[in-house]
Image (cartoon, rainbow, N blue to C red):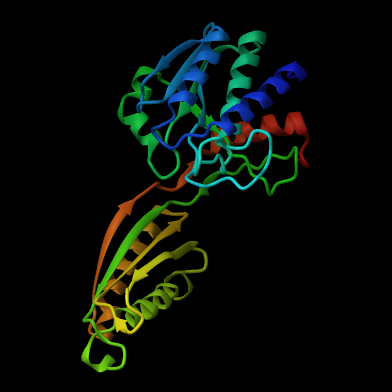
Length: 316
């Protein structure tokens, strides 16, 4: 049975409501409340509180498989520049990654299945907080998600604006890279810019280290071991005519294999320890581990592929 045009219109309205009221990770109070309210109105069993603002709703239809369908709810700390009628009303916060759409789609799925009952078994609808770098999924799991709601498998999607409308992309194995953040502190010796020989310049050391780090993916790894190392922030110096005693670099690296991830971390540490010594500068690094590689299980990926092909055709 096709999804009704009225439900699609309702989902668009929900998405725009969420877009206008974005909330950061673990602060999704209004979003969580509204999601739970709608799920209850569909007749689902609603559970709140996992990871603070997480919501899980259950729909049963006799014996059969038990699966989870998951969406994320949090927004990003970005000021919205558009002038649409549903523009963010929260200054400095925006749904720039599409979680408003994810939540609306999962709500529409729950409403459709609750109405049609065209399935057998049990579906748990999981609305996750704090996806953006804060580990909301991990916290839900640690607080007993799969003990309280056992599942044979769990499925999720992510919108992809670069893809043509109506197409689905699916693959087995690694789908999204790991994410690890770091902060590098380079400590030298301050001096007047006119007499650099009397100091140890951490700015020059920073420039050399930034360039050296780019050789990790290009020279230290196989081209098949995909890795991206990015320095995204540089902070150092106050006076225009004085070399600072300290420079701080911040950045991330991403990999598609967890063994490569461990190796890259070790290489970054060795570069930070050795490269600044050329300038008589000391390097230190602090780590902020993030997400592991997102990996699709082959059997579940194949099921999604078969369903998408049946609905859209093999070319879409």
